[in-house]
Image (cartoon, rainbow, N blue to C red; front, side, top):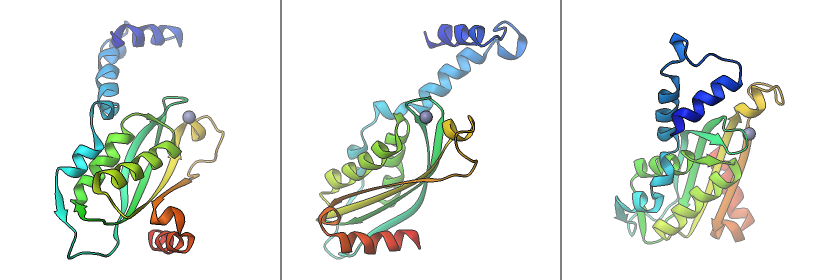
Length: 182
Ligand code: ZN
């Protein structure tokens, strides 16, 4: 299905889809595309809840920095990638640290815009863990900007989503952002 369309695209850009190096490309692109959009068929809240622990003896902030991610911008279907930092103040439960990274992957492996990716991660943590508050910071480089020369290579875009207690309390949010940027 996708294969025949990729073959047509190859033709449109002036390539010969029959030449040796490209014969298997449509099949490979279809497979790669299925992998990098696997997030549509996954549920982040389910993953976050799959390893849940009582938070009664750990009432402090949970901060996980530098979770790597790779996503595709929905405007150009070109990669944007970078790091996600997640901070949350637990309610009754905490999740396994590896589950946060997997939840990031669920939303990253879809066609995205960075702002929505950031918000969706925050909402999933908030909802799945019934947290008191969540701050998510995403730092990313966009290939659709850099490869086309719109932006200088290495330019990083930062987005922030703050929910719960961090949405209302500016000072509290600022404290967490300072910790994240350390
Ligand atoms: Zn783009």
